[in-house]
Each structure stands twice: as structure tokens, then as C-alpha cells.
Length: 413
Image: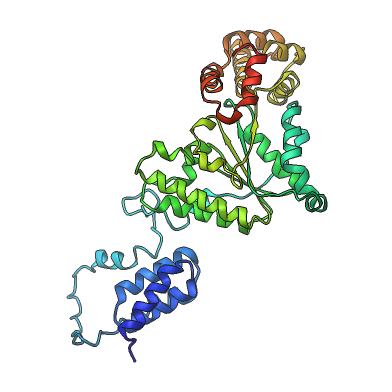
């Protein structure tokens, strides 16, 4: 007995309302096959396999023969192809193109929908072995993290006693190359939680609607992986001010991000939100409202003890001798961690070229590192030029008071 049209219409509306309900889609696909609507049924099967790639019932439906619709005469069987005639591969591919993955990567027939296993490859949940003790210096940053984020999470009884809410997330901002991602990993390790880092390239897709789906999949994965630290890097690119986006597809992606943040704030069991940006003034103001990224932490260039630790880290596996780390740290005031890494690379390059010229290897010494410091200039000047203007003319509500205080201390304001 074939299903009636009102039944199919009701099932279609139900699937539209609950697109992730796999059993419901499976039922609709079965009914569509019985009604002879094979093309629509295959589309539903494709949607099922996108959500559950190994669904045996969906794969079995692909083998079901189509049933002729009652208002149509049963088609006559097509004659067998003559010997030597080619099989219609184009028609076959069009039927299963949304269901089966492509055989080859990078070919012209590769999947361009951005679906399939993209999320599994893009969103990798990690286990962090770092701790805040591994972050050298930055005593003020650690204190703020402890007070605003870590202590309430590690002490649930005291949190309930004082009514401290865990709603919302923490937004770290500051100049590039100063360790915001490293700190995020250390926070995950401190909490014993999984770490899920995501950047702009992992989420934003050129196809309409795919970016929103990626964001939804990301937050769903974080909830399934709880306890989990969800770290949004370059959040100014993901959550750019909607007033600057007008009617571009990115505007819908920002709206989806806001919806997911609200969902996490309402039921954030084991999902801890961290974000980082070099340009907080470009982040949509809605993202910084209470319940979202409502706590802000300024991550500044490494202090002297931190710079010494960065030198030690980047020289630890290189042949060095007679290196005065304290002096190197004092010579690199205003350098970022990335700048110091570049200094170490440059000094190794100098020693290598000298060894090639002399025909015998030698150790990296203090003169090599000091010469490299003379060559590598701090890269943070342009960022501080912009930050100075923000602190002077756009510090509405005291949002950048910490930044202004640092600039005054450095006589940059």
C-alpha cells in the first residue's frame, strides 16, 4: 500500500523542523521509495549518511527498487544495452553523488559541498599535557585566570556557596606572538579537560549555509567531548562586527555563533569557552555581552623571566655554549615570544654558515645570539600604534583600561 500525499507532506514538515532526527528521515525515505519518489528518497538517504556515515538501514534503502507512482503507468523495461554500448556513468553518479564519497582526492569530481568527513578532519580534540606552571612569568595573567576562570571550576562547593556562575567565557587579547594559544592549552591541562582548537579556516566555508553547519557541528562535538576547553582562535575573524558585514554570508555565521554561545551558556556542563584575538575592537559587541565572552584578559609581551624561559626552550635542542640567558632577556625588552624564536633561528643560521665556511662545526655562542638580536627587530610596533589609538579614542566603558595602563607605564600613551 502506497502512502498518501498528506502523510508525506506531514513527514517532510517534521523533518524540516527536526533536521538531525535520523530515524524520522529514515522513515520519510522509506515512504518516499514506496511512493515511487526515488530521487527525493536518495536525497534524504544522503542527509542521513552525512550525519551517520555507517547507517546500515540507509545503505540498505539504496538497494531498494523504485516503485512506480500510482498516477503513472508502469514503465516498460528498458532494453538491455547492446554489446559494446557504454554504461551511463553520468546518470549513476548523479544518483549517488550526494551519498558516496569520491574515489580520488583533488579531482574535478571531488565533493565540493564541504560536507562528509570534513568536520572529523577539521575539528581535532586533543589532550593537553601543559600546565600553568609551564607558562614562564606572566604572574598577572595567571592570577586573573585563577580568579575569573580556574578557581570557581576547581571548587564546585565554594562556587555554589558564593553563587559564582560559570556562564560565559574568557576572551584573551593582546599583540600577536605572545602566547595566547599556549595559555589556552595550559588552561585545558590545568582542568584535565580535552582541548578543541578552532580557527577561521576551520569554520568559514564559501558555500551558503555550510559555515553555520560547521559552527553547529563544532559546538556539538565540544559537548560530546566534555569536559572540554573550546578555544576559538582569531575570534575577530569568526565573530566580526556585523555592522561591517552588511548582508554578506559571514553575517549569518556570526548569528549562528551567538546562538551556539547562548546554548552553551544555558547548559554548559563541562564545556569551557576560551577565545583569542589580536584585534578585540573588531569583535562584534554582542559576543562580549554577559553569558558569552564577558571576561576579558590582556596578554602582554613576555616579561624578563618569561623571555629567559623562551630562550631556554628554543635553544634546548641546539648545540650551545657560554650562553647568558639573563643578558639575552634584558636585551629583548618589547620582543614577543615569536620574535625570540626568530632570534634563536637566526643565531643557528649564523653558526651553520660559519661552520660551512670553516669546514668544521662549532657551537652557538653568546656573540651569535647578540648579533641576531641586532638583526631581528621587535614586530609589535604596528599593533601598539593601533592599540594606542583605541586606548585614547575608543575606550568606551573602560573596556581597555588595562591596555591604557600598560601603555602609560611604557610611556607609549
